[in-house]
Image 1 (cartoon, rainbow, N blue to C red):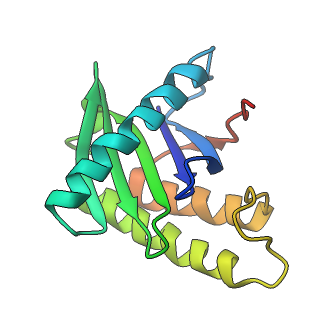
Image 2 (cartoon, one colour):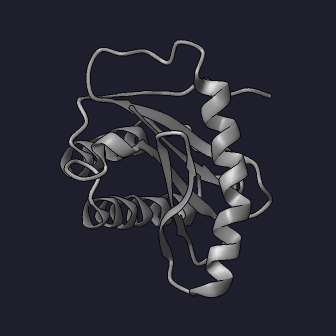
Length: 151
């Protein structure tokens, strides 16, 4: 299982989803995953101050969950939580980087759309499909589930 979210530079989620490798469900783990993603923002900002690269691999770890981040030019953050058991094969650094850059190209297209209100949640079904396709291609996932939002 892995969890992907886009967090704005103002620290609120713009987009969230979960990728599964089988028919597993969230089973109440969504709050924990959101907490880990939120806590990883600070670690990734520290890492960004040390290295100005957009892609930051394994910036944080919680039990067997690794956190990789990608900073956009507008300082929004892509956060991918993935288990360390899958880190060697399905979640290699190159695959994660390619996933981030592919989703980033879709993200730029959404941001440039005149129909998208800046800093609002991304609700586009086409964006969902493209993120799902990128996850299937680079992260070898089977299905994507829209993660419920908590207010």
